[in-house]
Length: 119
Image 1: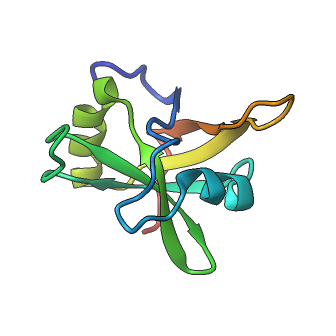
Image 2: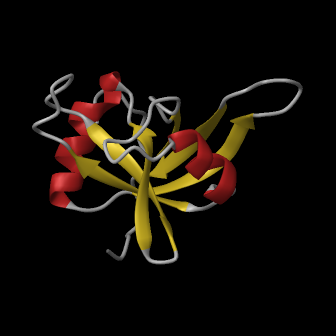
């Protein structure tokens, strides 16, 4: 990946304050279900009207995948190309915000491109 360092790199989930297309609140999903070291799942969205390279980020809770946001635009094309070949190992490194009067929460994550992942 040109824009991402080799091996392990960190980023932030984008779009966490928006609602999902089914009306679910990403903020509620993050507040209620996101935990440190939780596995993340990526899915390309080639028909996304904002970015043809968009890569959505999901968590899995009780067998159901729920979207929490997107990969940043500067990494989306390369991550998308990578996940076309094989899944990426990605995990939550921190849930941010939500305290001291902050309304919104966010999610930081890390990716280990060298780790083999079972689908």
